[in-house]
Image (tube, rainbow, N blue to C red; front, side, top):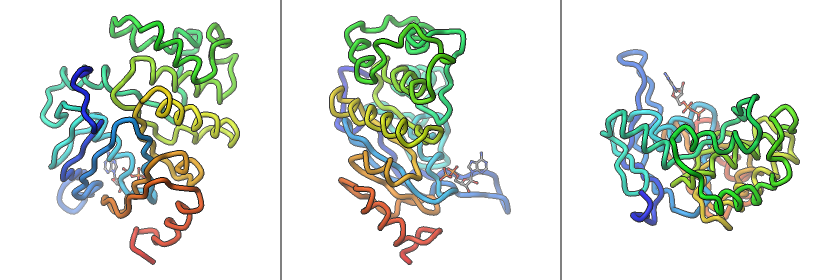
Length: 251
Ligand code: ADP
């Protein structure tokens, strides 16, 4: 995909995602269209059950859609066969989860390069050095996960997501397991990966302070985008959340 970089890192067009059928049918996404701009930090917010994780999974090619189309960069994800989809995900998408998902027997550096090692790809040394410096891990690379704090382990996970220089990084509540200081650090590193390394980050969060690190906040309710805020602050986000009731209607 490198070489054919577009201004949009990911795109959903009329995406519907339904689970089940008949009486038990649940529409998790109800016609979502959105462009995720390259080199920007986007937060996805909304009440529990509003479709945040489903949208992230559909954009990341982790889940199929019921209707509509999804692109990652210039490549249409919808309709791709398994093998191509797996390769696209491996080469173009980085993930950071709430749990750090590090292998305990490998040191920090080995964890960072593991996905590339599995894919048989050689890390770009200069890029890796910048990533490690950005997340402040240069003096911790030989440490195993058990020798690192939670915040440091999540830094390793962020570096692992960045290592292959993906098209886009998805974070699912990446600070959910961290105290506020370590969480703020991780958000700072995600911010720097956008500002200094030119990466694209999409993060699901319920925390207005976390969302305030983003350039843009998308609000979901009942499977629809009900608001789209640029240059958020924690106060603006809180204000906006108060104006929507639990089902996303303006209160
Ligand atoms: P959020 O991340 O905002 O909490 P989700 O995307 O997880 O919301 O879920 C949106 C809706 O889809 C919810 O009603 C949820 O119960 C439903 N849903 C999500 N995944 C599944 C699944 N695998 N099977 C059935 N229903 C699901």
